[in-house]
Length: 382
Image (cartoon, rainbow, N blue to C red; front, top):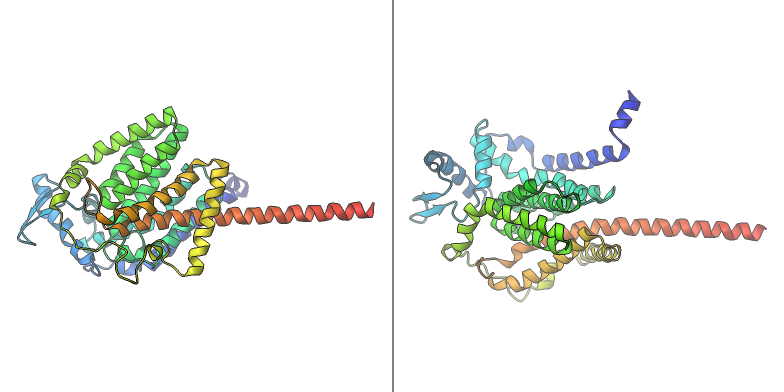
């Protein structure tokens, strides 16, 4: 029996399962599952405003075979799901078929948080990182989720609990989509699945839409080969077509969006780009960025394209935050700090890889030193 078990589950597989399952369980316990399963109305931050949307979709739009429409309930009338993402709302209604509405909404609200670790692990596996890099990336995603340096930009637990659950769902799908695209480049399969995941990510949040399609374009540039270029083109066109029913009206109608009147950052004498790019204490900013730089340099030396993509994308995101202060052409309204979570996540990924690489180097150096010392002792004896 033990022999059969060992054939099915290696030590690495057991470790992977423990890391992914343990991370997910820890996140679930943080989110208080007993409250998620309590039949009440979720609120807090912007969460209360999201209670209305899926119910209106269920009661008024879907019976008329529509995903978008008009509501007279707020602002003397406003377009429903014309400028906000409909896919998470549909997921709420899917759960609502068997669960009370409040529970269904809360379960979808935490879905992105609970799926980011496994999506990150799959990203590492599809990118063909060797053990234990996928597991370390999983832990990095957990660190990102617990990061409290920002609360409304999206992606982490704090932002999600404030109502940004569509963002976290979209982010998990984006990370998975990147991994699937890398696998498609390397193994030339799974293009339609990749396009579907990328499209779902784009349909789940308008800000992550920029991140996922930007990442696809950059991956295609890093993997610049004829066959990979055709794969990227196929995936991109298919994803655009699948998401165009919502994305195209969203982009072309940006002139009619409500301007939240947020000032671009930095704003005020106490704010700066430095504090945006490095929001933690000086010690942790040095540690995180330092190890991320170590990983990037090593990836460039090794010509690891996934690692180079992460590092280069961090640079582009830094530039995007800087030049996005006055919104973006064509797309229009963009509060530039909303790009920061992507930078933080990729930097955490690079950090854990840099820590691992440094540990390997130190271990190798120590062993070589021991071997050299042993050889000198043997020569002295002779």
